[in-house]
Length: 205
View 1 (cartoon, rainbow, N blue to C red):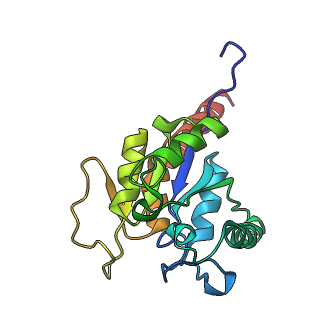
View 2: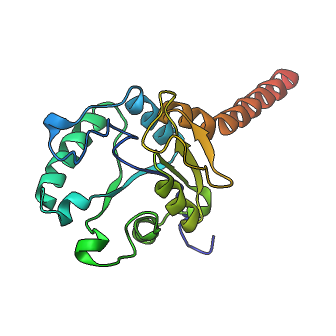
């Protein structure tokens, strides 16, 4: 590779509605409610080498509802909880803007700025990465950045239950199902390779 380190692939994750219940402007650990199966799915992503990167619009910052220190404190608490389960997040990226208050920006999803910044800072291969979120704007940001995407559509409906799904975007009801969709082909390939190696060793024996 000419002395260059290979770029790492990533799972980009929306926060509210993807990792935790979206109860509105979550910024304290007391308000954080994990969605089922999230830690287990994140652990499996890490096990096959994906970086885990949260990319989240946080207009509550622009609205003055909380500050960055509040978000960082919550982030540290979430990180500690996940690290104990082998599912640590590698990085968190926030858009603090709200166009009507702070003017236009390039980081508020559906713009791809958060993903592009993470890729530049972390050495990520966007074409081999995935964006997973529960809003159309999440996957639009992923598509604009050149990622493959999964839109989460809960069986009981959600904020955008009737919104059209962008072309080329996969759909899953929750993060654990998205993990199966993303990792399924890879795990089947690895299983087949193991079986081939085992068969060859048997023939040699």
